[in-house]
Length: 106
Image (cartoon, rainbow, N blue to C red):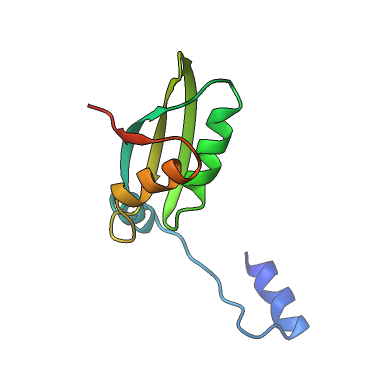
């Protein structure tokens, strides 16, 4: 890390900063996220989860999204996001806009 700093200084890169990560900072970032599971409709093949995942990943503040086709037109999506920046309605609207209505798994 120090070597990177020296190279940046040598090259005259302005705005270069070192991000120091601590376990406390990582834990604080993790505490700010929420994970939900959505039941997703209209899935008909193994390509559908890719479309659902990509639609969810486009939502600002989504940290991680995964989806799976279970058969018979249904599947699920597991989404980790920052609830201070987005909400469940935004997530379900994203899947709906992609052609896959969804709701919170009960």
